[in-house]
Image (cartoon, each protein chain N blue to C red):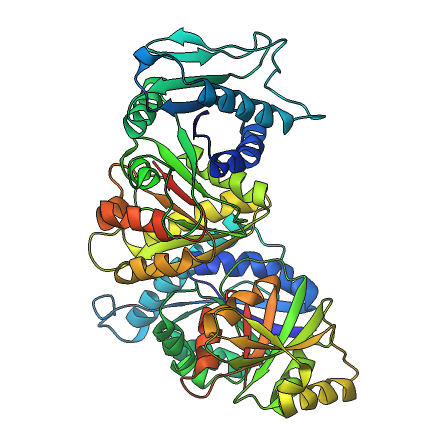
Length: 265
Length: 287
């Protein structure tokens, strides 16, 4: 059973994440620890030290706990929670990174509503939390039923690294996966190419999956603009790929993809 | 729900009947089918148009064959009788819901608007010619666009023979009416289409992001409870026009355009006309 850390804030993205997490713990055989970071602004920061500082922090933590419990109560997810939510006070990215390392989590989960601005996604994946994360990151953009998953390969994807992480996460998964190689091209509509067009990316990934006792339902090569490709993944309830290393059509495609997305390193 | 179905004798009008019948079957709406004759009322009823309207009604009722129908079929031959300067055929007496036929004389735009106002319609539905222009044959230029722009109620312009696979529903900043949520629910169900809910973000003149998200969360729950998978997307105010133009090629656009609507302020009349004209799919303006 894998161990995941779910970040919760009081917003739409977390509402989606909580509801999806209920389904996720079932299909990925996963235990979840909920967390929330209270980030006090400069005005809120206590000027005191010692017990004054600790009392102030306890008050902030208590408020954070109430927020998280209220959200959990509202969404009432059918989640396999490990323990009570962990509340931290401080810088969001730093606190979560520390918890991910200390708790040896195998997956970080959080909601992040899809926007039309690719820069929002770029900022997310280059944030300290995502760029230094010790484990794969699951970005929940929409609430979908994870009936089927997809492994995404393409330019910049290292099949070895991707499949090593995929095996860890999906070893007990109760859903089937497809394998898709994305190629960028300005087309009027999305085109499906012969599997041979996927070259070594597709062949290597298939071999690695086979070596590890996995098989995919289908493998295909798609070709089109990032938006066209992203839109075609709506049939999937979960997508897994590696972090894009630079701004590229693949990064744009991942920015637009509406499906919950696991990014590995 | 009260629907005004504006029809003429062209194939695009005949083509929308099955879709309207499905919507009517799900909503049990009161329906008025309205035809407009360009000749003066004093010249008498245009018999060709009257025959077309009766054929439209038969086609509508035929969609319910073998199913429970709130609309009773006429017992015998139907004839138009004079009514308020026009002509009409009333619903069958044992009909649970109204299915009226009307013919009015005059300017099509004016008469459609007047009928919708008089009846307190919730929705006007009309078809339009295929291709880039979206017109009504032989009528004032851009009739569908003008109805969509100026009507006091919601308007659905159905493009000819284009299946709706996706409905992109742009969330307004004003209160969202239960009726319009339900209308979208029905259209999504009828077409077995995907629903995308687009929320607006931006610095000026908009609700706080938290409020927009709260509204989106409520709408998403509304649809999730009805087993409809609603995809969520946030679009910046500045990028909305470009986004809508692009999205209109992917599926039906549904815009909330109430009186206090932010979309109403952002979308000039010209833009609504352009959207209706250029969209590859049907367009729904919600008021």
